[in-house]
Image (cartoon, rainbow, N blue to C red; front, side, top):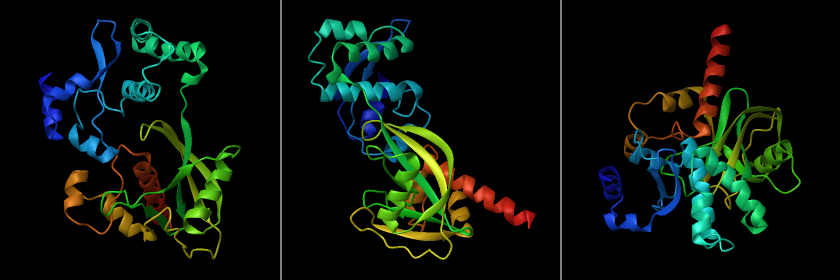
Length: 270
């Protein structure tokens, strides 16, 4: 309880907010699991608040499921097709039981279907540089890879080509899958990370200001310098540096790091 009160204090919230928490399960040792919405808008604020805390965050394995259940309980008006005791019974038990309960709740009422939206996130390069962009909602100075939701009926490849064309006016080729990551904001998304290159001679960026605030090509030296800076993500923000990259918990960070490592190895081999 003391750790939770300390975290609430970090966000300027009174300990009475604990009363707003929602029971969403319990452990095999009969420890109750509660979820509490602190109204955080992104990953950086959470990561800075408790990078090594024992509190279950939206980025832990259990937290990803909890976050999804918690949001769905809110949006479905506390699962109206079930009584409160039935909900507590379905969400009780172990972590495995919690996952099984999701499917059981879905079968009892199709309107409660738990969904996860596919999102493509693409690091575009021209061979020597990588293209990074930012939205107005990003922390100051932060640039990331291009990303967007897949449309109905689209393949991953089609979604990547459309998103890149829409956001920066470029055509890409040589698409390569990299990795994936569950992202709990704003609800639940599956981030599908890929690398792609622009077609030869097509490097002029046309920023779609309805979706992006800015986009630019960054050299290997610029990106390497941003990756190797010391200090926490929050400390780097306060230094007003020209380029900040997403924190390590974001898949975009690892995509950019992989590109730097590949480029560095290629340079050494040459």
